[in-house]
Image (cartoon, rainbow, N blue to C red; front, side, top):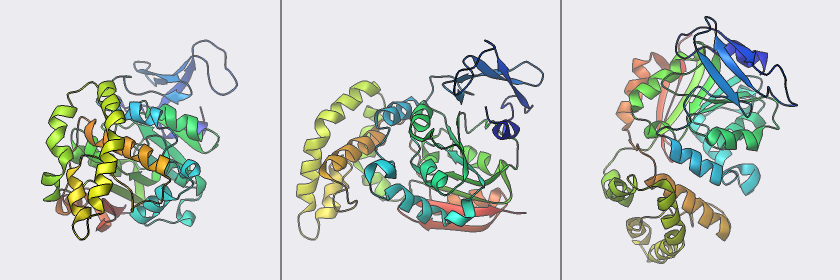
Length: 330
């Protein structure tokens, strides 16, 4: 356990400092073999498993994300795809630069397999990558060669950090999948230092929300066993993708009409190989139908939450997703 990280951590139940306890009294090459983080009064203890502090139970509402990111561990990493899709989205959404992040403490909330954490790490940031699900294992496996990476399994509603500690905080593609989006957002400015920068994004709530086939089908798919849903999509996505492409080729109206096919189609959008198109389509179609929660937001709501948090220099833009970014008042 890195001592710099330990100084940032606090018990999410009591707010007390945490200390490292090694039960076995023996360490392996990378991390304690049998260790935990214990609150100052000794009441609360959190295990460290595979080098990752675990502040939440292994089973929770985000289990589908653990399943998908461990199965698609490499898919969206730029270092694997050979295309800068994750870095392009990260820099466009945040408006930050490599120079901004170098040597700074950055919190990635909802890190998944680490697609955006990789971008921040490559910029020279000290990245704390947090996720509620077992996706943290995929993130650690992907990025553990970065000495400035720290992975934590934790809850956005009970963040295990002291207040006012991070220079930059971002949460991309995450907040709409929490049970209370406003409360999830409100937790983020608390751990941001005065003068620090925050960036979040959401699915945008609009009339399109009512015509997207995923919202017609989610009342059924969210009740299916995740493994069964994945097998169903694994069989059906290739043919649905072919149908979507065929409809999309219709002059003038094709790109609109293809939305009725319940599959994510990145042909003509991302410069991926055919194999990558199939993989990204399966991954993101599963991401449509599996999450327990899917709560799009309006631009006015995104701005109001920033204002209620006392943030300054607020911007709400459309950058593929509905993006809200701001600075914490010094």
